[in-house]
Image (cartoon, rainbow over all chains, first blue to last red; front, side):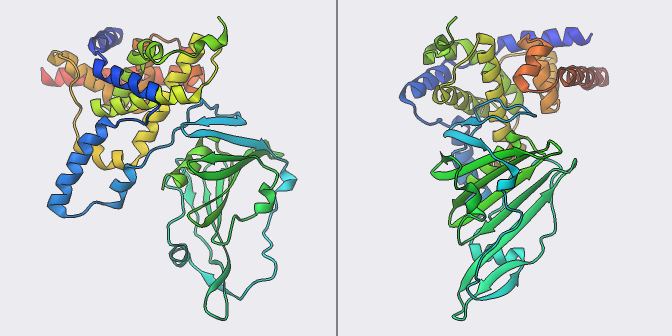
Length: 250
Length: 164
C-alpha cells in the first residue's frame, strides 16, 4: 500500500515540468555571470508595499531578507575538515593550527583609563549594533554574560574594551565570541594565517583538534568597526561557517 | 572520462539537472517562486564554484547537496520566516483530488523525511547514494525512509478514511 502511494508520488512528480522560461533565464544569467533574479522576491515586494500602505512601516527583519545571501557550495562532512571551502562569493581557507598557539587569556597591556563594568545591552549600545550571530546550532544556548570590561578615560571617552559572549550546547559543544571595538581580539594568534576575502571582509580561519579529539574552529575578522574572535568546540565545520555567515549577513 | 570534461556549458548542466534541482526545491520550499529562486541560485553557484568532479555521480551528489543547502539557507532567512506562513502551496500541475492530497501529504512531512523520500522514490537514488549526497549515515537514511513512509501512511490513509 505504501509503495503504491510512493509510486503515485513518483508519477505525479513526472508530470511537473520545469518552466522553460526559468531554464532560459538561468542559462542567460549563467552566461552573463549575473546574480540571481529573484522571482519570489517580486511577489514579496508587492506584499511589502501593501504592508507599507496599510501600516506605514517595514520591519528591520524584512529589509534584512533582501540582502544577497552567501551560500556554502561545497559538501562538507560532519566529522571532517576541509582546508578550502567554496562559498558563493569566494573560497574560505581553514589553516591547521597547533593548540599551543592559542592564548588562553588576553593581555590588554597598560590600560588607557579607568576600568568600568558594562552589561550586554550597554556594551552593544556602545558598539552601535547587535554583533551576535543570527544563527547558532540547534540546542545551543547563550549563557548569562557576566559584566565585561571597558575603560573610560579622564576626558569621558572610552579606551580599551573587551566583551565575551558564550553559548553552550549538548555534548560539551561551545561557542565563544570575543568582541572589541579597538581591533580584533587575540589578533597575534592570527598573524601567520591565510586570509580569505568574503563579501569584502578579510577573515582568517583556522582549526585544531584537542587531546580529546574535539574539533576547534577559530575565526578572526573585523566588520563595521567591531573586531571578532570566534572559537567553537564540538560543532561541525558547516555549522561554524553558518555562524560566520550569519554575522556577515547582518 | 577526464574529470575536466565535467565542466559543462550552461545549456548542458541546466538540461541535465533542471528536473532534479527544481523538484527537490519545490518539495522543500512548497512554493513555485521560491523553488525558482533556489533553481537559479544553484546553477549560478555551480558556474562560479568551478569544481572538478570525479564522476557524474559525484557531480549529481554535489548538485543535490547544494540544492539542499540553498533551501536550508532560504528557510533561515528572516524574509522567508516572515512570509512563509502567509502563503499557500502553489499548484504546479493539473492533478486529481487524490493526487493533490497525496502530494500535499508528502510536502507536509518534516523536511528531512520528505527529502529522503523524494531522493529514493523519485530520483531513484540508492541508500548509499543518498548517504553520500547528504553526508549522513546509511543507517540514518534507512530510518528516515522508514519513518517518512510510516508518517505518510498515517497522514494520507488516515485522511482518506476520515473523508469516507
